Amino acid sequence: MTPFSNPNYLGKFALFHLLCHIPGLLGSQVVVPSSVSAVLGKNLTLECRVDVATNLTLTQSSWERRLPSSSVTIAVYNPRYGISISPDFIHRLYFRSPSSHDATIVLENVGFADMGMYTCKVATFPLGNTQASTTVSVLVEPKVFVSAGSRALIDGSNETTVATCIAERARPPAEVSWESNLFGQSEVQLFDDVNGTTTTQVRYLWQPTRHIQGHSLTCVVRHPALLNDFRVPYQLNVQFAPDISVVGYDGDWYVGRDNVQMTCKANANPPAHHFRWIRLDSEMPDGVEILNSTLLFLRPLQRNDSGVYRCEVANDINLRSRDVRILIQEQSQAERSNSIAVAGAAIGAVLALFLIAVFVIVLVTARKAPPAAFSDKVIDLPPTHKPPPPYSERAPNLPSGVHVSQVAWLSQSRQAERRCEATEKRRTPAVPARQSPTRRSRLEWVCHQSGSERVFINHREHYV
Figure 1 (cartoon, rainbow, N blue to C red):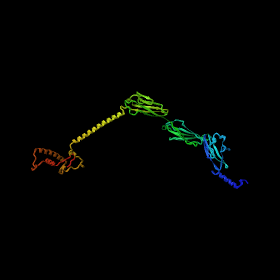
Figure 2 (cartoon, rainbow, N blue to C red):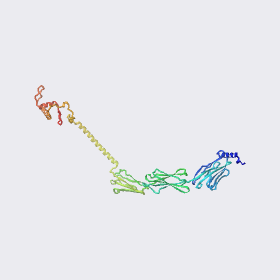
Figure 3 (cartoon, rainbow, N blue to C red):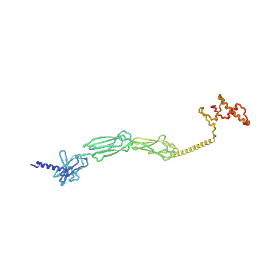
Figure 4 (cartoon, helix red, strand yellow):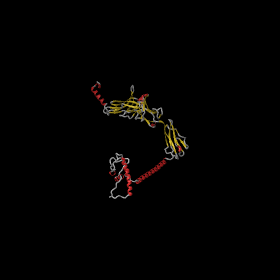
C-alpha cells in the first residue's frame, strides 16, 4: 500500500498544498499586470513582483514567451548562479533589479513581433513553481503633421479647405479634431495601412474673410501611445486687396501754408507693390512731387491747388483707389475763428446799443404824454353790453313822444345855447339873486336845463 492510497496521507497533503498557496504563510505569490501596452520602437517594462513565505527558499525566477506551438524561456535569474538571457534577446532584454522579491524585465526597441503572452515563473523549495501571465500589445504612435489647403485663401472666395491635420499610421486609430473659433466644419477620412495601422485625416473647411487674417487653428491628436494630447497650431494666411487710407490732409489747408503732404497707406496681403497719385479735375499742379506713396507740395499752397486727388494702390489680388477732395481756404482755421469772434462781438455791441436806445425813447415818451381824458377812457360797447352811465351823467327825462331827431336838435341847441351864454356873460352884468328871471325862449330853456345837467350823447348810439 502506497502513501497516496492512504486516505489520511492524502488529506494531510491537500491541506499542506492549500497552506502553501496562502500568501505570507507557507506559499509564494507572483503578481503581474493582466496586459501591457508597448509603443512601437520604445522600451517595454514587464513587472513581476514575488512574495515568498519565510519558510520557503527562492531557487529561481524566469520569464517564458508562449508561442503558437510551445513556450520558450527568454530570461532566468538564479540567486546562486546569476542571470541567463536567451540568445534571441541578449542585446535588448535585461532584469531591472533582480532579487528574491523582484523579477521585472525590460525589453528594448519593441516591434510587432514582440506581441503575445509572457509568463513569469518562480521556483521555491520545497513548494515548487508559481507563475502568472500577461499579454503584450504593441501600440503605434502616430506621426502628426498639418498641411495647407491646395488653394490660397482669398478674401470673399467660396468655401475651401484651409488645412488638413494628419495622424499617420497609428495603432489603434488616432482621434483627431480641430479647435477654432471660426464657423467652419471638419471632414474626417480613415485609411488602413500595413501591420494593422490606420491613417486619420481631418480637413477644415471655411469661407475665407480678411478679418481673420493672422488668427490660428489648432489640430488636436489623442492616442493611447501619447502621454498628453498632441497639439499643432496652424496660422491662417488670408489674401486680400489693398485697404487704403490717406493721411496728411487735416482740412485746414490755406493759401500760403507750406511743408504739406499727403501719404497713401495700404493694408494688403500680399503687400502692395504699386502706388500712384493723380488729379481728377485738372492737371497735377506745378511744384508737386510724387515720392513712392507720398504727394509732396514743394511750395506754399495756392488757391488753384483745390481739387480732387486720387491714390491708386495694387497688389497681386486687385487694384484699389481712394479719392480726397482738397479745399484751399483764404485763411487758416484759427484766423477764421478770430474773425468770426470779432464780427460777433461787434454785432452784439450794436444790438445792445439799439436796445438801449429803444428803451430810452419809450421811457421819455411815456413821461411826456398828458394824462388821458375821461372821454378817452370811455369805451363804446354794443348797446346790449354798455353799462348805464352814472346818475349825475344821465340825460334828463324827455316827454313821451319825443322823436330821435328832436334829441339831435336838442343837442345842437345845447351847443348853440352854450355859445350864447358865454357871449351874454361878456356883454351884460350878472343878474342879482333877488331879481326874478325873465321869460326865456325855448332855446334858452334847453340851454339852461342842459347847463344844470351834464349830458353825454353818443352820436353813433343814442340814449334817451
